Length: 395
Image 1 (cartoon, rainbow, N blue to C red):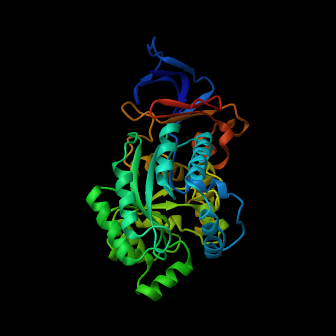
Image 2: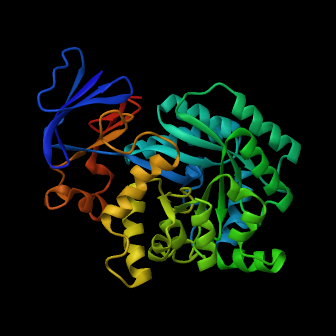
Image 3: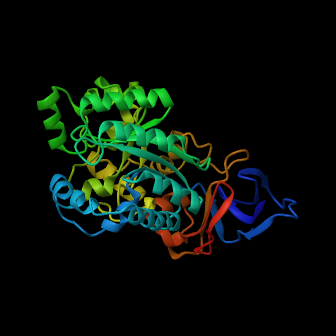
């Protein structure tokens, strides 16, 4: 049991009681004689971040291949470097990545990478939440039968209740239609989520039109991927018809503005997606292309890029973008969190209101989006467990 004393919540001072892994009471001067106490004076309590798209272990490739276009970056540098990574390398990289995410207020990540069992182990040990995808790819490492076996083995292996297992076919240009249909079938059979890159670059769209006669979004629909619980990363180059499909199929877009800018993949139209009714969460992508796992930075870039793309300063409001990274991110992955409220899972961060970047006091959410950096985050709690306190790791 934990009680956070005299913390700011929505502009009022209160105590917040955590019993087990849920918020059990919120109010003034709560009686909790047996609880561990945290002095919340000078702090505000907020929902943490939920990273909807990343390749966590790519922290080992940070800075290894900068200032290149996506396909040169992947085929000429990233894939050859990844071929040399051992299972032990990837496990250690996942630990480093999760520590980086915790320091910047993230308690969940949706991952796609090799040796997914190491990500399950690392997330479990570090006390965070995750959806770990089993990779499906043509022509690299494993035959199709092995990839199916790997997914089912991962699904059946013991794991924390905080860890979900999904399928992660890489993209329409690296996974055949037959294998995409197989992933859709497996997802429906096991009730698993599908996580895939989609419409990231113009080249991807043009190649898909030439090869399949349709856009990547329509191709994924034709292959049955969008009949599943699907999360599509990037979605930079969408037509109106694509957006209609995504809304009708209740697909989530994982927007990664920093990676899209750095690789010059294009500028996602936040305003058009919102007006169409699309559901948008935020992701950092991997640290080889972002180049860090700080979702707070992603929030700022998402808000700013929405405005410049639409030439409209009202696009991508602070409230809208912050919710995409917090409450909606949790909701989208079936996590009963993302809100500081009685009965919700006890995921939260404490931010230091005395930090110079938060001192104005006009709007905490605006300050978190446009001004704050990770140094503003003092304490991180996930599932009722303190992971970071006074910016020191407890795990």
